Length: 132
Image (tube, rainbow, N blue to C red; front, side):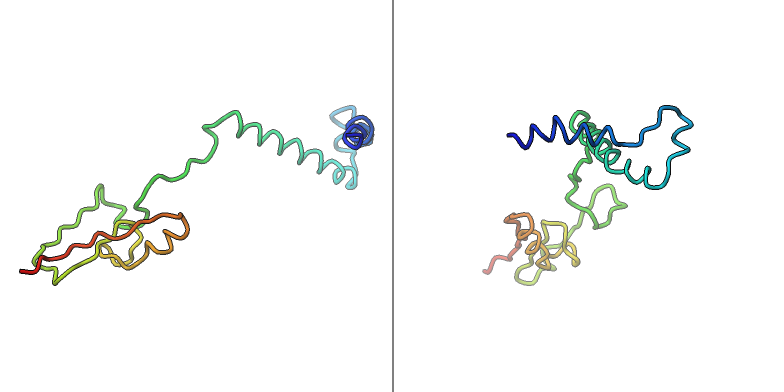
């Protein structure tokens, strides 16, 4: 605790007192290169604190995660609909449900990496013809 106390009571005030902050507007133009370099760390710290505070108190500023499931298949269409005649299916067919298949609407196993990444359990819809 004494380390923190020394930092707040002595080290930080001495550091801030030693910064080359001019008394007038024209004084900023008379600062040298090393003076400007010494102002970078406190400026970055204040900027970071302001940004983190802004994100904390302005939730609308946070980026919203995409809630879209389909991110690549026929995006120009209002609704992706595929009609497949049951007579065209030989014995069985696996249809994609993860929207990541390169062979849409059929499953190509793209859900495997998705399941590992998201710890999901998504799989295809398998349509099978009844045997007589």
